[in-house]
Length: 88
Image (tube, rainbow, N blue to C red; front, top):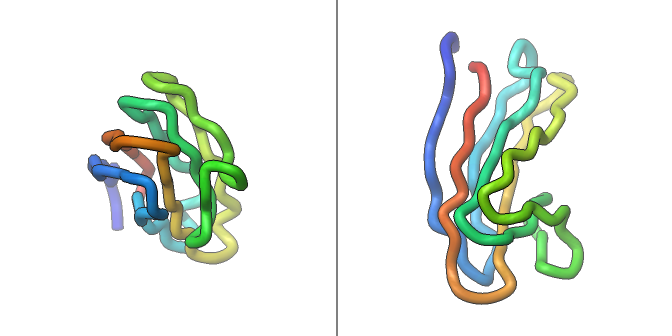
């Protein structure tokens, strides 16, 4: 793959797959932002266990490139649109 991978995903109160990042050379990270506060992590992420992302704030999720990564997000109530961009 080459270029940039981008997208937007609607996220609710259950863990939703935002994006999948392949192994190297996709090792720079994933830049995400959300229309409402959300929490990111692995497949089992919850509002209690996830890394918090404030509304309309860009956050870089680092990746090692050693193995593929699936990034999930969840909100504590309602919905949010999570946008992402990464090289790949």
